[in-house]
Structure formats: structure tokens, C-alpha cells
Image (cartoon, rainbow, N blue to C red):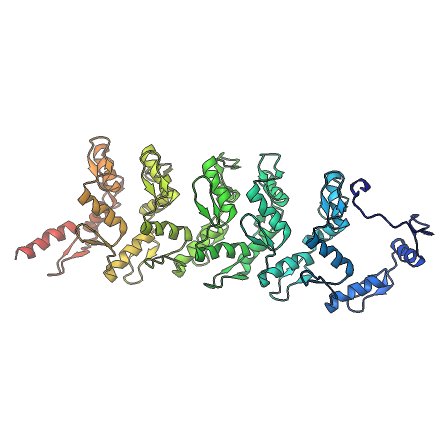
Length: 603
């Protein structure tokens, strides 16, 4: 260790006559020798009257008493900051002077404090002499071990006087206090962003330099932080050492467990000053605030797309590189995020740990449950500033806003057609490939997405979970309920610019516009006949195959479309839901009502 300390200030050359009979160390004064001997005997004769802590030297007790009194008599002439001891002030002044008198002989790195050099020396020696008795993790210093032990004991002795939050170390509390004061003294010279601590700035700088000094031996992935590498390695080993005592969910990080526990306690300590929305962690609040400011500080160098946090940018860049580092061991499917792999694995196990308390429905992800609960509450927290339409998810609001701006950033490489979201582009690409990977187990019909299959299955089960509060009519799709509710309000917000006809949904307007343009994008491969709707093409193709997948349970008659089956069932029930407004006569089919109305028109 002495080899790494060439920059140390040499001891003065006074004669040292008083030698310790235990270790041989010499002192120039008998009082210093006496104080030193207490290191060997363990004697601490100077007791603090307030906290019972004891010390080997009276001067140490005096310094400690300032912790209780808050006294900081030594002030910096440059910045006014105060300190409890002359030594602390002396070390602090090196921040202004840039002096780093302790240099490492191995790599040349310099330090403002001797303790910093001593800790750094262990980097070269790989020595970690202080080991945790609970988990065998080793540390470079006793102070690091002491702080680590609080993970096991749960001790958080340092409490914030503003919000009551507790911390494992005084340094963590000091950094946290800057959140309340708004202080970010460490500024990035490249982008001007401020940080609460120098390590945060150092790690941030790696975003600009591209430096990733911590590399995974299994997959070669690099990280800007050592703890990020440690957490990543758990994805290879499957270890989740931090477990929730309420639901059994495991986490790779203690912080992840801490944030998760707030989902059980409903604690949301971080609140948005603009809209009052609460969040379980400060990062989520910071990202949310970007939705108010519109700020997207992290930009993709390849496509220019902006993101609210660096992690989202990192995940997005994998769409360009094609990298999917998280692979399912059962089916080999790759994912860009470890959380998506975890959710996917539940499709194999059938696990749905997040359950709705109102209807009992289970979900594989907590955010899916949160979005589902908005169906019951009617909450739509993301509102379009142009038309007032509300959405349950911020991503759906962003896609919707593109209908106003005309932006379609996701383009099909085969036909050049643009889309407002990557999901819609993916679904469209299956039109070219003909791929329908999700099949119905009842009728064999294929679908492009799991959501389409899920909605289709309601045809067989009869499930209609979305009910109209006005008339009680139920629907298999939430969008069907929204469109239906316009029957009661007579609202038809979508108007054709050619003929002025109004429609209840944007999809109905889109299909209608094809009457003016003559567009028939869905073509039969057998007879080349074109159709304005995909459903019309599918029904037509059954005339070639003679397929009739919709069967009446009472008489066994088959139909090519579910709507024809529904009309047919009226012949068994006697129901006549289509009524003439002029004479009150009822009909079982809508076209029969239309023919009847011509009788009145002829009168």
C-alpha cells in the first residue's frame, strides 16, 4: 500500500522518543502516546452526554458534540460553506484550489484526501478485507461494510427534517437534501445539466463520451455503473435477491423492492406541482414533468426520435441494431427489455400476479392492471389539448396527436405507407406477409395480434364486458361502446369533406371516403374482386371456400358473417329490433326496414 502513496506529506523530522511497547510506533509527546495506547486497550474514557457515544481523545469528543449542537465554526472564505473542524475546512478548500496532494504511483490519479488514496489503492490490489457476515460480500473499507450492513438490519439512522425520509448514510441524506433546496451544484460542461453529486455527474459524462467501463463476461454488454452490471448479471443467473414480503415478487435491486412496496401501501411521495399526480419514485416524476414541458432531452442519432429518459433511448436504439439481449429459455424468443422477458415468461407459466379487486381479472404486469382499472373508474388522465379527447395511456395520446399534425413517422419499407405508431406498422406488415400468427382454438381463424384474437373469442363466449349506462346495451369492444354512446348524444364528430356526411367514428369516415376515391384496398386472390373493408373481403372469400363458421345453436344453419347469424336468430326469438319511426312497425332485419320506409316515401 505504501507504494501508492508517493504524494503524501512527509512526517516532520522531530525526534520521536516515546515508543509504543505493543506496535513500536513512536511519538514526540507522551500525551499522544497515551492516546495511541487506547487503540490497543479499547479504552474510550470520553463519553458524550447526549448519545452515549465514547471517544479515545477529548478533542474527538469536542468535534463530535458539534453534531448535536449543529455548530460549524470554520467557514470557507471562497463560498461561505461552514465546517465542524479545521481539517474539514482544509480539505474542502482543495475543491477551490484544485489541489490533490495524494498521488497514486500505479496510475497517476490524485486525491484531495489521504483516505481517498487508500481506498483507491485497493482497486489495484483487488483487496477487499472487510467481509459481511450475512452474505459474504466483501468491501474495500470498514465504512463501506458498515453502510452495507444496514441493508440487512434495515437501519436508516439519518432522517430528512423536511419530508421524514430516512437514509443509510449521512452522505445520502446530504445529496437528498438538495432535492428540497433545488440545489444541483455539479454541472455538465457538454449539455449544462445539473446534478446533486459529483458521482452522478461523472456517470452522466459517460453518456457523452460513450464510455462503458463495466463489461458483462457472459454477453459483452457494457455499463456506465458497476451496480448496473451487477444487476444485469442477475438476468443471466435468474437471481432476484430482494423479495417482497407481501406478494413474493423478486427484484434485482433493493431500490426496486423499495419502490414496489409503495404499490401495496399506495404511497406516492413524489407529487407533480402542475397536475397533482403522485409517483412512487423521483425518476417517474421527472419523466412525467416532460409531458407538461414537451421536453425530450435524449435523442436518437439515427432517426432523430426524442425520449424523456436515457433508458428509453437505449431500448429504442435496439430497434436499429436488432439487438435483443434478453432471451426466453423455453421458446428462444428475444426481447429488448428484461421486464418484457419477465412478462413473456408468464405466458408459459400462466402466472397473472396482478389482480383487479373489482372484477377479479388477472394481469401479467402492474401497469396493465393500472390501465385496466381506468375502465372501472372512467379515468382518462391523458387529454388532447386540441380536441379534448382523453386516453388511458400517454402513448395512445402521442399516437392520437399525430392525427392532428399529420405526422406518420413509422413507414413501411415495402409500400411506403406511413403510420402513427410502431404497433400499427407491425400489424400492417402482416398484410404483405399474410401472416396471422394468433389462431382461434374454436374456429381456427387467424389474427395479426393477441388483442384481435382476444376480442374475437368474445364471439364464441358471448362476453360483452362494456355496458352502456344509458340503455344497458353491451359491447365486446370498448371502442364499440364509445361509438354507441353517440347514438344517445346524436354526436357525429367526423365529417366527410366531399359530401358533408357525418359519422360517429373516424373508421366509418375512412371507409366512407373510399366511395369518393374509388379505393378498394382489399382484393380477393381468387376472382380479383375489390372491397372497401377487410371484413367484406373475408366474408366474400367464404363464397369460394363454402365456409360458414357462424352456426345457429337452435337450427344448425351456418352463416358467413356473425351479423347474418344475429339477424337470423331474430326469427327464433321473434325479436323485431328495427322499428319504423312513422308507423311503429317492427322488422327483424335492417334492410327490411329500409324497404318499408320507401312505402312511406311513395305516399
